[in-house]
Length: 310
Picture 1: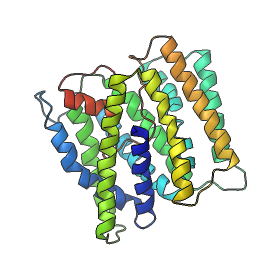
Picture 2: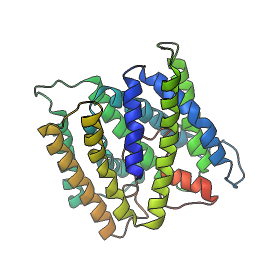
Picture 3: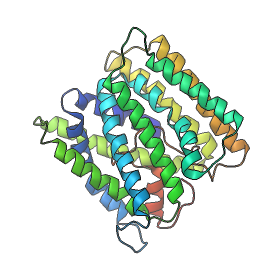
């Protein structure tokens, strides 16, 4: 259900992206989600301020979260849904690579082979040199995946040293400032129904986050995490009936390779008993924005105590 809600959230982004600049869609979605997120964060009982304990890492994480949101919104507005998801599915592979320099982890030959297979799948989806030329939408999707992976790894590095309020609010405020400034460059007045869609983006993003929380609370992460790949099914259904999009062979083949590699990485982590120590197994695939905050951060904020898994 969480993945279906997230997919519907992305459909609304694509619909509005066909009428308005991506920065404008992200601005109003972030603005309208601000009251909802604020009410949630008021439940946190840990005393403190918005001042980070490790400002350098928090700043890098904030910039990456903002980049992920902006690029993700743009990619969904420019590319077929299934193609965007196929590229975003590379996030766990990038997390594996980034965990080496940032977390100091050692990656064995099995995970290296899985990463290589997944990156081959990304190349199949992008098909450089093929009939379809690469666009800014493809680049945006790749940047969104890389930025989202960086956010996940840095969040793991920070562990419980930072309050969930800090990790949620700084990207939120940054998004509002960045996208608000972007309105001075391009702005199209929004109709009331479209403002309602922006509110639905905010609502569905948070609803998907809470459904993810319930999934991870009631099931094993190694079982819940692969459910994220079901988004390709939602993308196919929505793309066909709403946008007239059809899956092509390179997207199907590339997505299949990426999903297989991601599932193998999750299986390896579970087999090694590292699910609670590594950031891949519980990482939501896709762009983390203020409208789709990381479910583990929401869980920490609403539970009022430290959550060791991220």
